[in-house]
Length: 202
Image (tube, rainbow, N blue to C red; front, top):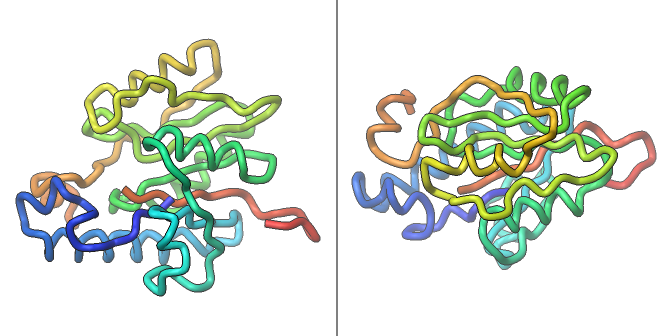
């Protein structure tokens, strides 16, 4: 899931500290760098789920990747929609504003989903940079009542997953302010699935 990198609409908290232009450059560079690192690995398929829906045809996006519209609602509703609509099997959703994400993180998430119900990548701000669901025998609904953009997002999600087998990945920095940019050395989201079986539709 990727938010269109438009001035004044992305990384607004960061923009208040470093300026709209610098925040826009970070958003564009961060998203493009993540896609270069992980999107074309043959071990999985990557889909860009775009917001706003009108931006799905924008030339800003990498043309080689399939795209989907996120639809309306808060972050949880939009992520749940993607988990409900993508083809059966494990799915991982990652944020594009975490410079440390690499293919090893995604591969480990899918390995864990071979035996766990869910996997989360905790972020230093109390949220998370990856959420993955096995989606068998059913699709879980971990986002109800989550206090987004707060230190409670991870804890709220874990509470919704009580009774499920949940694995945690390493803690990484989600860049939302100038301090995080400095710490990382540097909303949008992309959806990653294992490759479709031969002959199957994406």
